[in-house]
Image 1 (cartoon, each protein chain N blue to C red):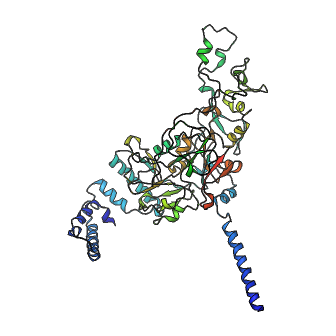
Image 2: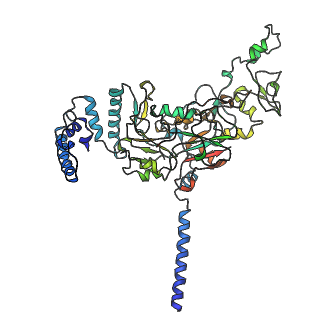
Image 3: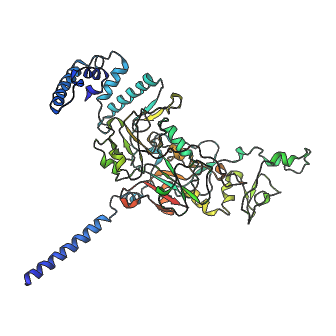
Length: 323
Length: 207
């Protein structure tokens, strides 16, 4: 597995004569055995550059391949990988980023509420989210989707999310949909590598390096909350958000799943998510569900709230309310 | 004959019991978020728990109403009004510049209260004391505490604003609660948000 990822080894494998022959099962098995032998030999020898560390970038990348799942790392290991990733960002893209591996805050469970009466569809939140989370500009990836719906409509499935005209339109309301950070998240159950999981403060995150890109979670999510990188994401160097978090807005690569993280890099420091801060109408409420004095608790106690597709039992931490 | 009737009876009782228990299990709210937050009644100490929290920033004033967590702060208004203090012009001396009113206040479009009950300048501003707002009851209100003025009619919004369902906090969810004031978002003279183009657009759904 490790040798496959290394460039030099891939070259060596391609040179084997087996590649040109038409494949039968027997030939395939023979080839696989040979390739495995070759690969392990290459690993022992360090495959030219890797272990010897002929260049700094190669050696850093080599070390990155052998790190653990984020949940199994000790704090020292987290610090090491964060340092490596910072250095790699410097070497590869020429930007100085500050990455954090800050853990969850004690006695905090994040919750979110969306005011359907107030949202007017200006989409400032979407733009702020794209900028904050270093989302791919080429494929126009967005975590938030705003649906324009007629009064009386009950499901965003019948709404229009591709609108581009002056807003708000009469007799319409706007419903924002993003990851709902379910307590019983179907995507977490579906993930075969446990790359996506629930953090103790309730945020459902993805360990990008553990994601194999199978996209089972997309199929499992009933809310269209997850995004896949079909291409290498592209962000202009001067637009990269430099304050990053290991589980949040650090740069992803092709074939990795990503999603809204309630802006983990901000919220674990007490700041509001980018979408809440950008909202010009105050339709978005964010806070600690375990704090009796928080705004979110006031909304849940005093307003008419509902959760989207509550009957599925996903137990989302994202409520809609009306004034 | 008797035994088989007893057996079927027992079967039905067991079946019903199973149904009742599974029903109860399926609809129990154990360990659900709702259960969790409803049980969380102990106060949360922001300053101890969160490392970097907002100290009270400049240009804020303590709000005279308490919210469920005690005192909170709001953004000031006076420093954002271009020609404050008003009494610099609005005094008993004559104004010698021609079209002074138009130059000073020509940009104000008054569209507040709808067509049925349109407000005039003197609904909020009084001739005697221009530096303050004056309520219907006749009490003076500092411009920084304009929420008290707006709350006369928009009492529901004011209640929600105090609690946290209307308006928004400034930058931080933790620490000292600092919120935007009414006039941070609304133009008091035409408070409805204007129609405009959205900031961006969404591509068609894929994946």
